Length: 456
Image (cartoon, rainbow, N blue to C red):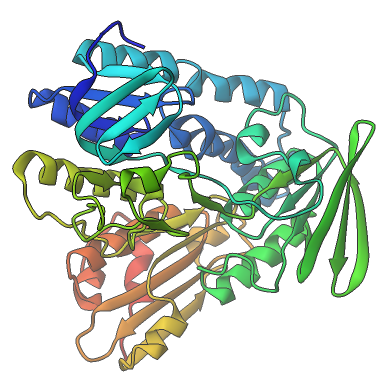
């Protein structure tokens, strides 16, 4: 905590992730007195316990997969992962974040507090022995792993724990069929572990295109990942250094002895410790209930941004930044800025990568629009054949009436780039014809885009 007896601030921010930091520093630059509070190491989830360290590990796993694809095609032998070396490399990206974040607050003159915050009144926050009063309050506390109501749930390791594993277990299980489980399962499998992924229905990665998900699952099965779909985990117990997972798979008993069981079954808004009722702040399972300007519908002095807000935005870091910019504008200018969520891309960083933006095929059909669905197996295309990729697909959904791009879905090693091309076009209203007319460097992933945009 900075040494200050001050207890009243123009703005109190709860959470030091990307949204909280952005609003706090922007308001401080305009002369506001600002306090920021977080019980966890400063810097937020994405940079320390989520996207960034995960991508370091995923990048190494990708190299293994790429070299294997070209084995016998010029590459003599595939590489191998050294887990401890990889984790040491990962640590170089995260170890300085809490200290550097604190230093940034100190230099900016932001009053920072390490501790758990809770409301005591509509404009008052209790943290430790201190009660702070805020002219405005921003809730940016992010999300946390959902409670699963499994016997022995306390034995589960969360995603942060996986990202800090000093030694990778020989056998590991992931509960949940979302992107966290898929990404970690791929990393663990490429690192040589026996991997089991357990999901309670037959539709993993439910927000992504099912045809491409099926192809990704097939790819990961070939890698050795064991999928247990329509499987309900019932109990976890510890037996020495191992954990015993008991489940029902298609009605039959499943028993796995593994070195770790990882929670990858979704996250929920991190609001339980905030005493929102005392602050007059309404919330539901989606998070703090906000209007289009990110202001609490029940307490006009309170805003929320990022994963904790009940906004229509996806729980992604770029959305936290988008909402934070809207909050900042509305605080400083007393404006009515609303976040523009048009064309929000999301990527599953497996190998191949799975990426999506806009409508799924089912959503487009339900919209009543006259649509054209282009589905391509691109594994034989030059771009992917030269890299030995056996799984490369794209599905692009177009509106026949005006040529607009309604959705794009990509599965391959270049999905993160291709999805961004489509995102730019969709966000700025480019038609299929206009995007297809764009000159991309050849030969590159971009030079293939024109062939994905057939309207006839």
